[in-house]
Each structure stands twice: as structure tokens, then as C-alpha cells.
Length: 152
Ligand code: ASC
Image (cartoon, rainbow, N blue to C red; front, side, top):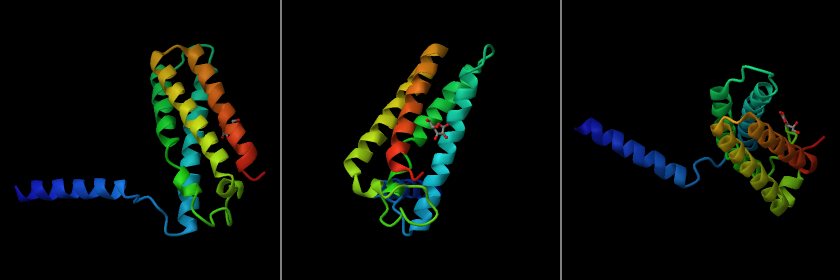
């Protein structure tokens, strides 16, 4: 019985910490490492979808659906790490514009998140032409944001 209470209390505390912004960063190095990790995973799973939808035959629908869900989830993660003050300096390709043109950056982020959700929905249908279209739309949002907010 005691053990069960301990588990419940741990869960409640974990949830409370999540709600109170536990993911805030205490130093810029952690913020940079966190967002680079997420962007790397997004690129990996996104490219995996690209490789599948280009196939002439034998598309792995389950993999596409799983990758698309993963991308849609990951797409929600890296932004707090990008708004960490001072994290435009150091070992990063993030442009300082992220910290100054915040409204424009948020629009880019929303466009990307929306496009990844649409891609996940398309992947659920299993209609590969729809996935291809949605994949192209996501790639467009990547490119658009990188144009203004990533150092070349
Ligand atoms: C990728 C990747 C990007 C985007 C971009 C789309 O796979 O790593 O940065 O797609 O090239 O235009």
C-alpha cells in the first residue's frame, strides 16, 4: 500500500513539474544541446518519410505513419530552448533574429507544427499521394523558417 502511494505521489510531482515549466534551461549550452538533439531527430524521421514516399513500390505504411507521428510530436519540443536568452551565441546555427523577431518566428513555428500534424493525419489514411503532398508542405515550412532564422 505504501509503495502504491509513493508511486502516485511521484507521478503527481512529475506532472506538477512539467506544468511549471520544468524544461526551462539553466544554461545556454544545455538549451543548444537540447534543441540540436530534437532538430536532429526531426530531420532523421522526416528523411525516413521522404525515402519511403519516393519508393515505386513496397512503401512501409506503418513506418510512415509512425515517423509522421514522431515528427508531429517532436515538432512541439525545441522552441523553448530557442528562446533562451544568449543562446544565439556559441556553437549554434540559430540566428539572433529568433530572439528579436519573435512574432514572425512564432508564425513560422505554428506553420511547421500545423504542417506536421496534417502529415501525421495523411499518413494515417495510408494514401501515399496525400502523404507526399503533406511532406512537401512540411519541407516548405522547414525551408521558410531556416531562410530567416538559421545562420547560413
Ligand atoms: C530536411 C532537413 C531540412 C529540411 C529542409 C527542407 O530533411 O534536414 O533542414 O528537410 O531541407 O527544405
